[in-house]
Image (tube, rainbow, N blue to C red; front, side, top):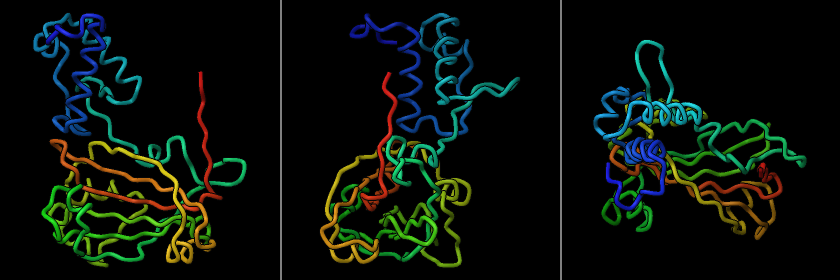
Length: 241
């Protein structure tokens, strides 16, 4: 382990960061068995106690989990809980409610220059496009535009393949594509005519926009997603300590 520029950081924190870097870069994916404590200690030139403290912290943070008698594994990502971790759709009091999703459109489609660039394809490449509506009861409150690398999810454009609300679980289980991490950016915008009609709001009404980049092994982006939602069904909640 290189200590040159990190002398002020406790050793166990450096071990934590080493493991997190492997997870974030896709060298370790959900379900992978991580090296044993003695092996990590030898590899990183630290004590076994230091490794144990780092692993204990990552288990407490639910980045890793222990299987008694078998070892320590990378935790499966719960996208259902991570989606809108601080921002949620619900009632005026901020209580979240379940959002049901329904596929509106799916097909192979030429991506825009920006989206092709995001997914590391040449301009005007054919990508998998999936459009879904999000509903609370019977009221549509969001529109989800999702672009995928088509060779990773072959045939997903066909209607006979069911897409569940929690799409990532299906991508992992059906197509064997590990979903390692995602990055989200939240912004605000106003609704154009098409979006306003779909969401039952007036044109130019405020909407929230969530841009998501989803990654698999080796830091490979596999999905670009843009979710547009009604601002009047949107709340922010955070605990500051």
